Image 1 (cartoon, rainbow, N blue to C red):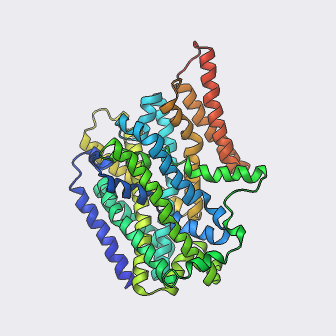
Image 2: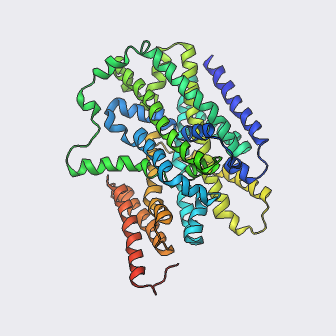
Image 3: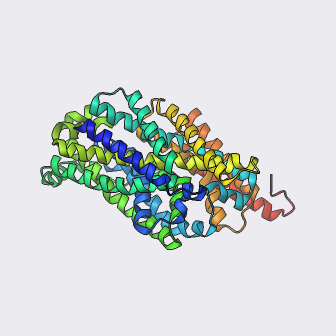
Length: 463
């Protein structure tokens, strides 16, 4: 029955992709759903985009072993990101009426900064997409014993197919359905494995106080690592194309703001359900902690719930993964086609640009698949993706919106210095403070160059 459900669910998503393709008349429809999403759909799309494998499989396994302190990055940092977008960034971005996030850097800083920013934006997505592909492989392995490499490939093909057909409209229609599936499926699963919610409070009370520690110890190392956990996704995912697409696809400026805020609070609320499921597993079935962490919740549901509950849970899990994967796959494809290739094709028609974007979707899927086969965990793949955008793109983005003294040289030096410092400390020195040092380098470089230009107005401001 589970296998039949998975097949039917996949067919339904493909059918919605075919339906969505009828709404796609031009590139604006494909990339931004015609800027016509109402509040309820924009909220569900923003929520479903973020609520992926790292929340259900990654964060839950970390929570079961490390407690509340281990999941600051996700879901708390991720919820913070959506709320900050609604408070400070959705309104000014919507007013700019752009196609991609790369366009922001071109309008604000010029073509050279656009190219560098676009390359870094694209690079930041491969790990995120790969994490979703790995998660689909994990599910199919758990359900039917299919080797994870095959399951990962099947997941990539399915998500690519419906996104290829309908673009942002396909993403939006599927996200609406998938959000409902996520909430219902997770609630039913929690209800059954906790004996009608009666085991939730005893499980919460049975943990030692240290399990619920949410603030760092008062020493410098712990404080710095705690800050890093909050800002990896909390700030690092703000300068991202998928976030930009959610804002720009909204029907109005007001919808863009409210949908981001509502999605942030919704994310934090619903994300508690996988954590509670992990707590039940830790308390009642401690042997599950000895498994591959990414298999803990799927195994809990398979071994300790009825078939209807299994159908709903794995439907919710597939929904979470596929909604995130499709959104993440569309985002870098738009940047590659719009910001990296289109400027060199002067006579490209809108129809030609639409097919160029679809071809870029295939390219992004192939590269992400290679990342998925690299052997990294889901949680690490996601964290490393957000880190790249934080150290290279966040400072120039915020300065471009709110700093009057912005200039090309400051932005370029900020992006390059932040990236280089982070990469050296992360991959050469293996420092736990690579993220903070990269962000600090980006900030200091932007301010330093801006001050230099202010002191010496005759100094070159462009590269």
